[in-house]
Length: 394
Image 1: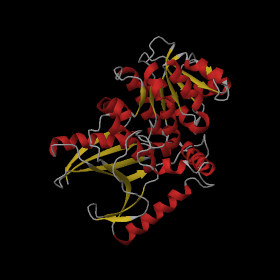
Image 2: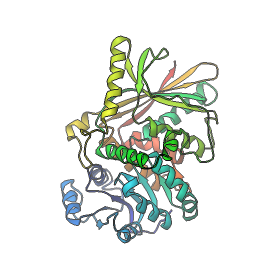
Image 3: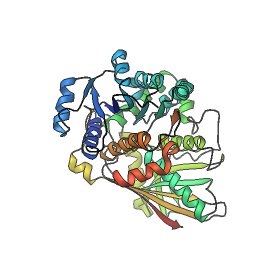
Image 4: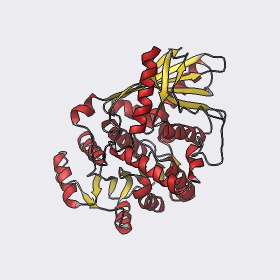
């Protein structure tokens, strides 16, 4: 971790839709917090326009940097303690930024939901990051912060009421309103293209333990078709983001020294209701998942209006099943559009927590939960419109 740079944080991609929301959040919520930060992107004129549009101070530093110009990336990285990048798909535009951060010992946070690329970057750079002190955090938005921390939180409850963490946790989406981001859709398309061009990558993509090098746990639920769950009295449908979130949860368990056990089983599904209507809803969720990378998917740089962002929400239920069958339950809820407004707050607070609260974390590739745990939960509750609540035994 560096501590003598010109800036604490550089927001790379500040002219993009989500990057602009991040810059706006830092400009408003940390205006008087002594934070030294800068906006970076390909065009100085666009950066200046965004700076003025979000009401950031006129003297907010602007840095011209382009992923196609490695020298400009290195110059940006050398000026800051942490790079917060929203420029995806990361498998297309992120490798040089990440490599520069690792080489210089600069902290790095992103919104990556691309397990293949994450697997490759961990394999390539982990040893060097540990050596230089760079702390690298992938998936610092709705992918996968509330899910990873939801498991962490319910396991803390399981310790209290069941006497030990549970080897089985179920993550269930009870409700959600919001938009898939253009960046998420673009990442899914880029991953599909990578799999088509190199079929050897399919096995990595299908592996629940793709992000736990050297460790393979037990068989996990496939979560690929609708089913009726008696314990929830509801139909459940596949969740599009489970492919990313489950991998991050298993990596978090490994990084923390397997507090959930080496036989830990975790899955995520969307609860759609009871009866024929619930079954029909589950089929609709399946159809919606298929459309998310189709021609009607949002474009990179596009996003919903402020009104739609403000009216979004998510409601996640976590159930830890003890060895004796007893269950501890907890919820994670967010007020605001998950994929845009809340994601901008979550990645910003991940960056702030890493810089200000988690100075003891050593270099290497981390998950937000494994690196910051309870410290990050406190920040998200205080600043980012998230709540973590115990629901007791079920």
